[in-house]
Image (cartoon, rainbow, N blue to C red):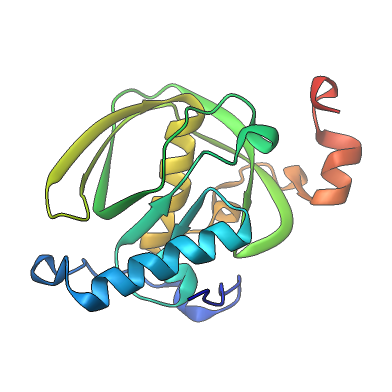
Length: 180
């Protein structure tokens, strides 16, 4: 079922999400929630969706980078994957910036700098613990989505407020010329 994505201003986007109970992984309710997240993500055209964005207060995220090529350039392909109770560890302090957008802040982008070398630890849909290292734009994607689990929106991380733009103005004035 496609769920409504709540937008900036909704107080539940600013709450810290609860860990998903491990004993409920695999239950019918769990499978329904994951399917709803995936369908809502697919319908929205985004590359990631956190449970708090559909007003569910759990530490669950679905990421699917297969459809992101045109918008974000060179991003490694990750098939639709569910991250339960994920934890990010920054492996070094090298930062890089990208113009981020968000399904909960439609038609607005902001330039955000984030660490570019991280490790992600999570539980998968079968209850197994997983780890991966991510660099570059993929590291940014994970951090953006996992921020939702802590009540943080990308706009909170924009250091230079002059680098917040509506999509149309971004296309006209901020998009690098090689992408135009």
